[in-house]
Image: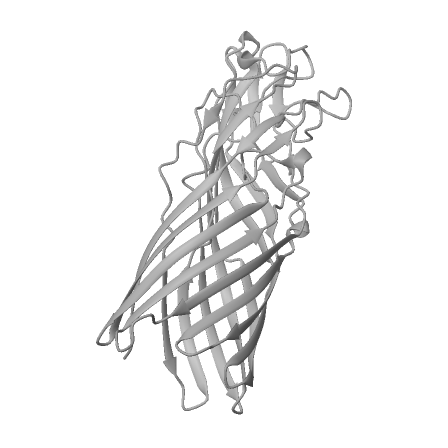
Length: 377
């Protein structure tokens, strides 16, 4: 991912590149039958997420510096039931475990003085650590055979409401305004919502092949903000002022629903050989509108192509995957961005100083390599 920012004064800044070396996306599952018409399954999995890392003093610093150490993992248990010869239904209960570690530069420009926008002397480096171990959710789904070689399927994933306590680690700005000052307290609460999703698909099975056409709607309009609320965190012994209480901060997101189409083909090209080959393509729209696009989560219209293969050795099957996704280049025109520079100490109601920090050009792509194995008992 590359970002070429235009600062709040309309000046082009040097391009910055994502420095994260890549992220593992683990998953593991186990399923066993419960009689002839039921199956019980357990699983642990993580979402596909592009968590980026940049230089601490880069021009993107007010949106994000490092999110690459964060983790979202889902633990789930599910039950599937066969209702007759043609209908199968299922449901899962899930717990989404969130360990958020984000590094971002805040503005420390107080109401008692005048600061130039983005003055590095008033930059305050902050790390937010939030652990939320219980964020329940779930899903339901069904499959219907409408012929010997045709199956319809649909599922609905509930949203996830992430709420958790965390720590806020603050480095004071270099400005002489803060000489002799210190920080008391480090508690902060973080809250945001992840969307519900609806999926539907059609599978046909000609010969030794399977062809699936599917669609996904993710209700990202539910993700309208992230809130960071310091609890009893203050700057003390600030010359001429005394104490600043760190106030709540809101990161406006205002995402839009996304829509995706998927086409997949799977089959056995060699008669009598336990080799399976796979080919897939997907197109998806982007969630953030231009005015709220930032390097925190770069997204846009994207095309994805995938190749895969699997080979069975007795009770074991080994699978390999290669995929590449390319996002259409995006531009937030100068003066149109609405993602603000965050400032926890300035009273914006009496003396607003709103600086928007997300103008510029965004390009991104993703390379995915996967391997897996499964065993039948």
